[in-house]
Image (tube, rainbow, N blue to C red; front, side, top):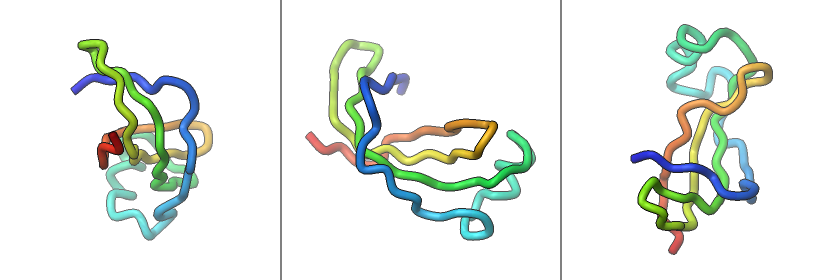
Length: 77
């Protein structure tokens, strides 16, 4: 399911960081070491078919690496 984020991600909140992330070893192996955080936020997204929806997104991020593995967690509309 391909999508793109339209505009800003609002209501950003850190869910876990450091050793609190279950996938930490995998993230470090794939993307490199860093100050990893699991984050959630609300955004509008556009699917490849052109439909637009408001959703809650979850992703991992680290300084110098950026956002990785963004996924839709909940549909808000």
